[in-house]
Length: 114
Image (cartoon, rainbow, N blue to C red):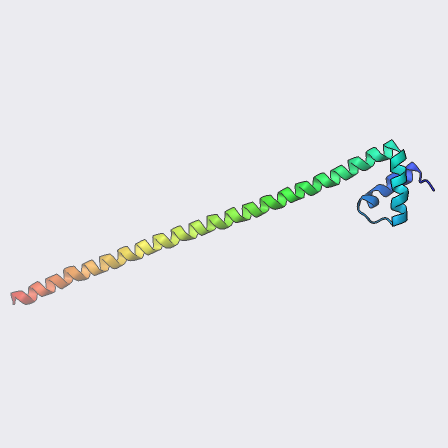
């Protein structure tokens, strides 16, 4: 049994999504062999779906790359903040020890003078 063109055009989205039965698939395939208009519509629909899937894959890959770069940037910022904090802490300790040294020298001088 041959399907009419308007019926095949209505069924094409389901056929592309693989939700039609095996018998319907065979009838649609037979019709597509003989009808150029339906074949052209099928090719356009199938191309659009394939093109959109490629775009989604590209977006997914781009998101992965962006997430990696964000993670890298955050790691760099954290490393910089920690390094700067350590330098400030070392500077504070150095000033504290230096002030103890100066005070210590003054105390020793005063004791020696007595």
